[in-house]
Length: 363
Image 1 (tube, rainbow, N blue to C red):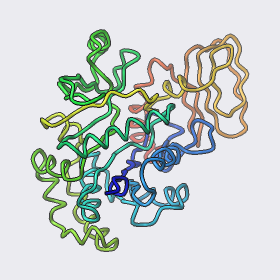
Image 2: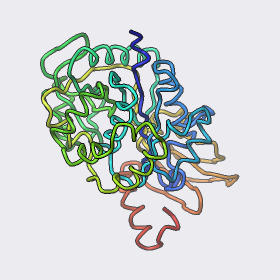
Image 3: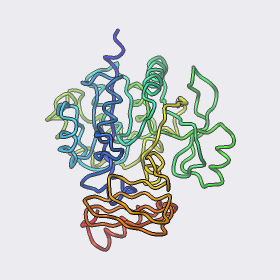
């Protein structure tokens, strides 16, 4: 049996990326932007990376329906049956459930990797090796596998996984999950060496995740059971069914609904240079810096007595600053943001406040 033929990838591509406002907007989220200046957007880089492991015909993109044209424009090689277009945002559990039912209808022996579209991987050969090790494990065990990243700092913006008993190679049973700890607890986690960042990359057989969804969130599982398997192999029929069923699903993450409850959850500790490109500070950390530790994203800047800043300005505007340290200066589509990097967790609230005061104009 050709294992590769039964392996699938689901790239989740529906988020707005509001922490990258004003660059990332509801109409053009961060996954569709070339943030790193490589000539490829984050979505395209995710596709390129996984296409070395998964047959191109087995790669699915799941995204909000409003982004269908953006996906088609950036990945014209995909067929319509490879685009799963959500009629509403319902977090990751319904999204993953739909993908699992869709794949299982085509291939009952399938295994799958689920990955967000906005991650940066710097060691792609190691990524490929780790994913293949993960596939081999889930194909021989009734296991739900997540990828754990060795923490490099006491980060409060990520979930943490505590490793338990070793299982095979770099894979261990998960002992505990902890969502976004405070700084003191994050420091303890870092010191113990037992905790890893939760990457949000998952592997399992479709049969295993469907069984888990039935057990832990039966309302979601039953929503997708309501359609006959052949519905998921007929693009028109599937679209009509999803338009009715999907908005009624509860909005809940796969972490809360399944991974933190199930007893067959494992973690593979990996070293493939992972970065969740979730904030301006992470982009700053990944970007080349000048002698004053400033980062300029394809823009013109004159900076005096200034260091540790990131400048992201669209258009031909010249930015001149004096005496600025550790700030985000971002200008796009009618919005200028000037915010200390240390306070960037407030950006999501700023987006909400702008919507309350000005409607959708700056969303």
